[in-house]
Amino acid sequence: MINNFADRLIEQIRKKESAVVAGLDPTWEGIPEKIRHSASSVSDAVFEYNRRLIDALYDIVPAVKPQLAYYELLGLEGLSAYHQTVRYAKSKGLLVIADGKRNDIGSTSEAYAKAFLDINNCVDNFSVTRSAADALTVNPYLGIDGIAPFCDECNKNGAGIFVLVKTSNPSSGQLQDIKTEDGTILYERVASLVAEWGEDLIGKSGYSFVGAVVGATYPDQAKALRRLMPRTIILVPGYGAQGGSADTAAVNFNDDGLGAIVNASRSVMHAYKSPKWAEKYTADTFDLAARSEAIAMTNAINEAVARKLEAKK
Image (tube, rainbow, N blue to C red; front, side):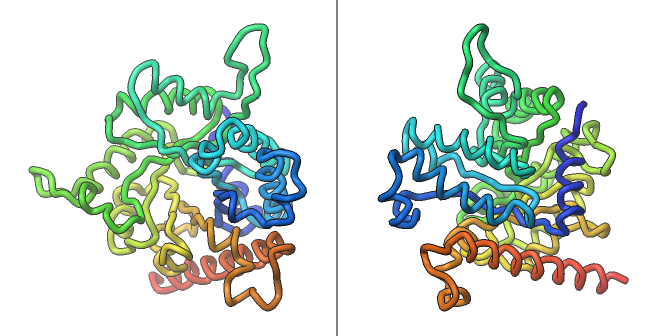
């Protein structure tokens, strides 16, 4: 295993003293009008928007997380912007987590894994316009048959995956909270499998490249899941616009102050619209507003994690 993703992520978290992940989820109407009107194409507009956000954030956050649906919605232009964004973010030293929640079995799962994580050209004698992310979100519903190809690709490329365990949406309990025959809850069973899948894939940092997704909107469940997955890096969505707070996110961190990253998309990207920043920033300075919000978020999470650790002494 080369350059374990978990080790690289922990290194960046320590270096920047931040566990914040900035979501890059551009909607066409959410891109400032000045950028949309001055761009020569949809791809140029989306990439320019992302570029400015990356330039404002790359030195203070360890990673960005583009949500693939927003790029796929815009067709080939959107996919072009996605790959430009991946390349540019990585050139600025950021880790990139592709949020696609992919899964399948056999050769299809292998194709998904290679499409997003393989750093090598996928065809002979032709150049393919593609850039691999550092990690990918995946769905565990098909079991190890659907996960193994992603783990194999991670081993080859030093990449990582984040497996859906307990998501932040209100209806997640319809399936994820079902009790199994032995009395355990389904999301707990998935968490145990995630820990099992990653137990032989642990890097020097003490964490596995098989991570988990646990929403900030379910802190009580997160406490139990943290115990079931002690060597798993948890990606925590739901902060900010979805109702998660620094304190609800902090329960996902281990006693070493590590082991989790917290994502915010809308609350960072559209920070200039927030009452907190509206008097200071406008649509023309959306990137500076995003930086201010990311710093505030980092401070809030660091303080919440410190309070948690202090309370355990």
